[in-house]
Length: 234
Image 1: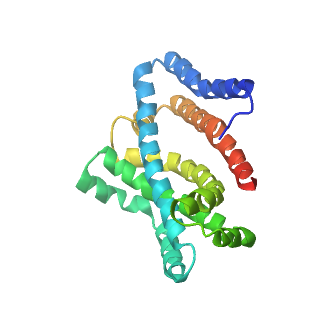
Image 2: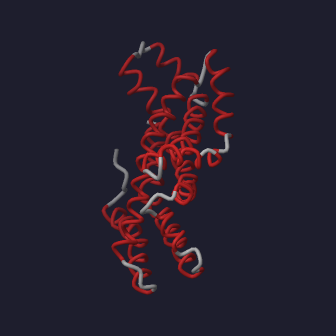
């Protein structure tokens, strides 16, 4: 699937991605923070969020595909709604006590935080599928891999991508909070905790984080969202 319209489009998006890292480099020099340490904090936090997202995307998609209709949905969907409303951070200190300040603790809580927007958006995509598409799939006797490839996957991609954008927005917030509560090091939580008494550094740290989130959305999620709708129409 071709995401970028032209080479100029690709170059422009790469420049957008480079912007937050150039900002962080400039920021580290101005406030005299070790550049390597700052970038390591950023990358280790991105790794944790990426690992949690992969797990959450797989789990959320499977839950949606299995329980979006039929008698099972009458039990599963209310249960999912309750789990989505559960105050996750109330359980973080207990998990940190039993599992310690580890990547597993952070990734586990990120996964159960961001899985629900993905799950519910995929469910919405499945419930909004045109009736003639469902009938066409039944008439074609699609099953197994062919059913997944030619029907189930294409109709769920828009919901998966929309849910990913929403869940990662929540994930960044949950990431910082979880790293601080768990007191896992290194990471962005460590950075913000270390400079919590320096408003200027904290402000520019937040600005750098917003630039990272913006650039990731611009280079990955926005093009994928546009292409997913085109793929669905085709």
